[in-house]
Image (cartoon, rainbow, N blue to C red; front, side, top):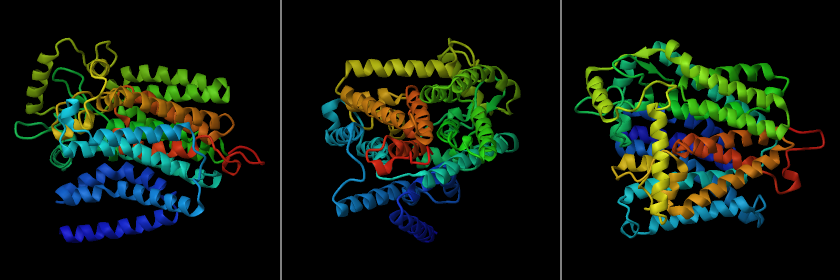
Length: 487
């Protein structure tokens, strides 16, 4: 079967690569839709018997298509003898960050005190460099209104589709199916994660811990929307970007359709029960209010904050529930004994998840201060977890880069993100599409304080490509504003 599977995959990839080579913008559509389905498809293939190197090769479709798109725009630039954009501060910072990643990948781990092996270093390099590649792809595309409208609908439609599937799942599909459908083995045996969520037993890992919300004790857990991402957090990031980034659609004559899709996506966001993501929408709305100089967005931001706090009280009362297994309860009791001071109440000041994020952020900052040269690639976050490398930092992108690439790496990452945000803000003063993307990018940068947002491939590819494409234009013909008015 391996030969047949690879042949089918090669054919599909070849068709996609040809389409991307002819029109690099096609890559954006494939990333928007394909990466939303990626985890579900990979887990399904694993359950069907596609394992190991074969599945790894299939999962590399996104890196291959990004490389094809970048090769095409590079070839066109060489033929024309000039870049498709004027070089700016954000571009220099992106190159400097990428160069630092390459340098740290070549430095022996022993020289920095790191313990990552070659596999971990390679995974970390990919994790760090993908946003740079996606950004330069976006910078090389000229997205006029004709291109932005269908892309925006694809983004909002994908979010609504993911939300609908997720909502059906949490109410109609028993959690027992998830414990046995191949997802656990895909995460554990194929990707290397050692999760201890529901379904854990003495001989195997369980589902990811955040698949459900633990209310404490032996009470039934709350189901969270995981959908095709197989993650409530990754699903919530899509919803955040879709709701903020497609604001231009909601002000057009076909707004009813856009509003309907946005309502579905908003429901999906609520059912992920990611309170930080809901609050990130408020951050984005404040950015929109500043750009548009209108009170409506500020009122909406205040309403979102109120909804976030109200939902933390309401969701436990109406959420679909599931029951722990006996092995789950044994593990939960052991975990509770180790952390007796934490609470599982969603609104408690010492709520376990909030406490863990805060403690991880403090530990990461402390590590950067005491080891400013960094430990090298592969010693932080998801990469360390996957490869069994002793974890030096986790959660926050900012502290992860500081611990991995040193203080210089963290500062470069922050400077690049802020420079890109400023570019979007400048473009968004008079243009609706960049304004929406500025709001979405600000929300993602805020989320990166307490989580590894670019560890979600959808964010790394789509968000950074769209941000690069919509940052302030550098040639008059690239402007979105035309004589007939703004987009």
